[in-house]
Length: 115
Length: 112
Image (cartoon, rainbow over all chains, first blue to last red; front, side, top):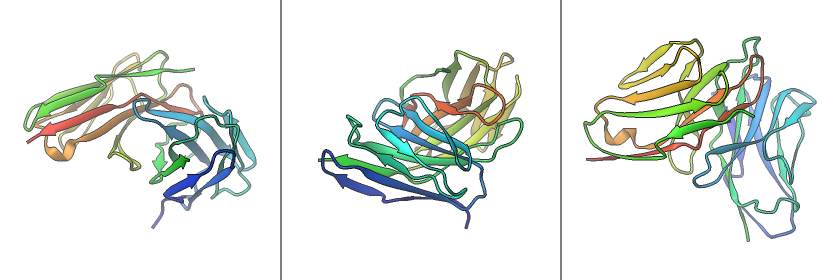
């Protein structure tokens, strides 16, 4: 079935370590997104990509990095520069059309805990 | 950047009661989305609104977008425990494939 797969579902990391979260989609969507969710703060956009080999910073990109080498994949690296990385991370994808109104399809999320 | 404000942030209703959640944007919306989330899980798509004055319904949930495309309301009729969760509105602030931002969410509890 088509969808978005995020892995791992749970991840523990020591302070000072980088960690990469995987996001894969088989929906043939051009656009992909990474959001961070903290209690009481809704979803905040980290990075988004409209097409392969191109991506833009969202509202809270500091301490994160992404790549978009393949259409299906949009991995997110949480670097040691991210001061408060413990959070729930959600990946999404959408179609890309001239009206730009395609809905977002979300993965099940990855919960990162920094020890 | 666009900001989406949701109200109320939390809502507790008795089963069978109606309720409304509001979402207000500081800018004109080019696409307004409503999602539902169970705690710690992904988001489930409910509805998408694009045109001013548009209204859509799915089962007991109705969403409207005002004529100016800056405010949307989500109405649940005869609420059930299965409606409990976090409701989020998301929006695109310009045409084309631009970023989508979300409101803070409304936590709904339905008491049997």
